[in-house]
Image: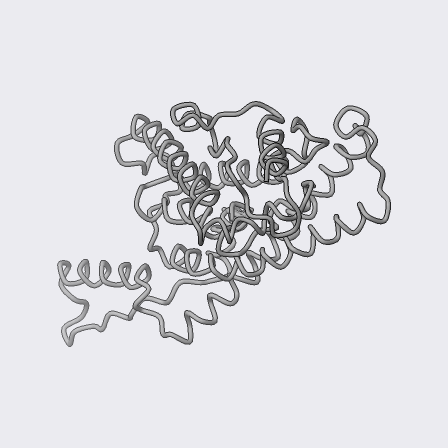
Length: 319
């Protein structure tokens, strides 16, 4: 998901799911193919026009995935997977541990009154962490081809704002477009995961972990997590975007992905909208947006803290 985008995103954390930042790391890990040598003519160097054409072809070859063999791409993909997964896993465990200590211990009286780390709670933490660790490994493998293609120059990231086509106005427009399209994609995908048969089956694994903790941030069915991060992987391949700004945004999104699972501010004793027992399919729900509540407000799915939990609880009692 987002952490992988940030781990390829720090190094996209992720980004995840990540989180994607491993872009710079990918460039270091995956050196570009050497350009073809330009042969000299009997009379000396090639004419200026021919030399310029040869240089352009060499640059194109360095960027084109077709210049690598299948074995080379397989090896590169494996190295990118290992790098992204290691970075994403380390960042996830660091942030999740810090958030857990703050929300469930240092500020327990305010965030989770009555919480105790008993045997049941310890088992829940271990289950959440194990699920996230496994899911991140699979999601990193699914996302690795995007980072390999980016390292080969197939994306449209640029390194300085001076390279932005259209200048500052285009930079601002790109940021608005990124958030607006991302919000639309995330809202309707997330809503579909609560209503459509196949998607809801994937998403049930995430809601079925019980009361959330930061260690459940990536406890997804891998296809669920990959689908949620797909837009963020694909965007830089279609729209020019500053590399550093993209990595910073995905890093923030990956951090948010962990913090939003600490149960702070949700009703029902920290259970929030998760509800149900293991593998219980999510029903109804609301607040499907990623960055804003715009689509939720427009479509009538906006609910207040704890309201979704109470709604689900009432649905189950009525059954």
